[in-house]
Image (tube, rainbow, N blue to C red; front, top):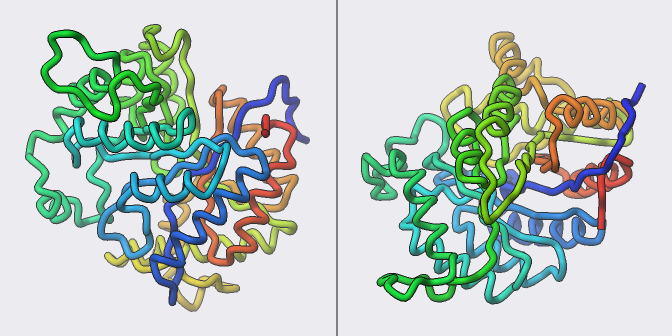
Length: 341
């Protein structure tokens, strides 16, 4: 039985610009652009892309460049980063990049900030060296967020360094996280917070409680605003959804084996391509994946929204077949829980 929805919330999309097997990054980026245009037609609020480095699965490493292209090929949907990994960048450079984006696309740019390196599992240290990341970079995260905020404010007469473009522009900052650390800091800074249930589903309640308990009103927000990210695959039948999920399951199996290649084609059964131990491990990696037909997905989404009291939902959907991927978002747009348009 579907739970009663008392008020609607916005729904948005998080995209990794996934590279499919036998596909080029150019094709992946074009598919992301096409999906953003379709999301705009359906009434989704935001289309965010994520910064990852060195992953054969992800084409959105140059996040601000991808945002610029997608924003130029859409008209109304908000476009942003989910997120920029701030330790990898000087705050001034981020301010100038997103100030440029906001100048080109007024009122449509969001900036989500993470504190990870954004490398593939197991190669974080190697990637940190390739990015010339200073050992103290992650420890500076909160002070870097504050510095970034200063660059976006109206400049003070004695301010020596200004972001041009950037100064005085309305560019919403979000903190992203999968733990209580970023949740607490987002609350303390009075910023909106995004929790990644696809990474740490067992911490969502604790993180959101910490965020709300530590929230202090700010120029950005007068009350907490929590967005929850969920991994969702919806299809016209439950069997179809489970079949589509196998592409992601194959990717997770590759991750367990120490490699991470392009998104594979789905298979009818994992038994011939994985061990029992690997299939057991998948249950730990994907415990909150919302997969199924319309009614099953709607029921699970209702439960997630009720459990988290989310102000907004952002959906990550990794499907090899692009028609099926679009269909998943079309099904979600039919749910009465969401405010569209």
